[in-house]
Length: 457
Image 1 (cartoon, rainbow, N blue to C red):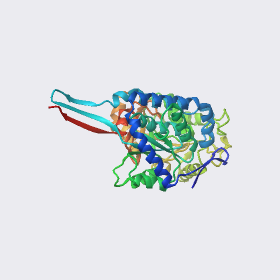
Image 2 (spheres, rainbow, N blue to C red; image 1 turned 120 degrees about the vertical axis):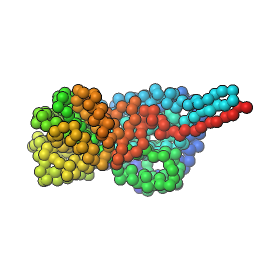
Image 3 (cartoon, helix red, strand yellow; image 1 turned 45 degrees about the vertical axis):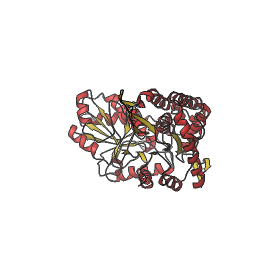
Image 4 (tube, one colour; image 1 turned 135 degrees about the horizontal axis):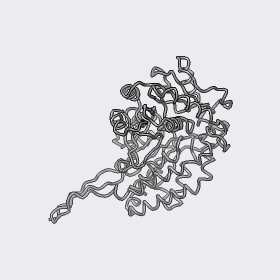
């Protein structure tokens, strides 16, 4: 089977790669399993240093990576790629590794040594998405390697060059080739490998359907699983908010990367006293975007990663308008709209009966609703199958935390949005998935506790 990356820029074939057969994949897993033993036996400080060097090597490739990303998934080159976040996340996990992985000493007396150690799972499979292909991958790759696991990276078919670049960078830095491998696998081979219990842990970022397939493949194997799936992240603007900051941040969170952000803002609730002004300011911002070829430095909004993704967002938007939603952005302002190139849209007069307010859009469209108070906002924010992040806008920290305690989500922001803090656990609830990455908890999920009870005499 051949994996083909169709560039959203012009619909041309940008890259093709052949997938591994099941026997070829099994041989690679076996090599990883053998190599992992020696890797885990190396001093933790050595593993940290090698991962840091691999990260630096990725940074040295950035001039080549940025246009490659534009060709593969459409992000404008003006934004400079992902290395800032990539480096921040990996560096934080390296910084905390010694403390996070330190043994828990319960007793060391003349009679007993009792200690809990954190030991690696073995071989970790990382299945990474295309929307932020470097940052999402490194969330697991860096701490998994530091903790002593071997890693197999299976990247999305839309971004096949990313896994190759990451592995090249880390192997050139000194990470053994069998310890960190890039693999091209079809869905069936992936499922067969998981079902055969060859992985100690599987981390998947992608669709709800993909997450279900991973769980089904792992059923009965007792393999550890981390899943970050869909999202429909809300923003809530209270009457005391800094309105300009709220509009700027939430609209950027809705539209950046053509709306293709895991924790992007997909629905906004604004106190009724600020609603009209918020919408007017939002429309002004969006009308200033330039939709076009991502290789053009003037472009601020590139194409979506694939024509079919744009088609789904168009369908949700059209259905909402047919059901009474009001489109605030004039299509005439975005003449490049067509195919993978999708104009941004703001919808008002929306309801939760509309798909655009309930299903993941993952595109440059956002619905905005007025609310009368916190209770209504909380009810609407929780009226979702998903729970990744929520963004609250107020000057009152106590009020924000009281609301946050009632929201069914993985992360709550106050006066910011669409950011992944590596010091905090990246997690979700409901159909968004299970598990947690980054932070100390990320290390806990990429290792298992092992207890030692030694009687000395």
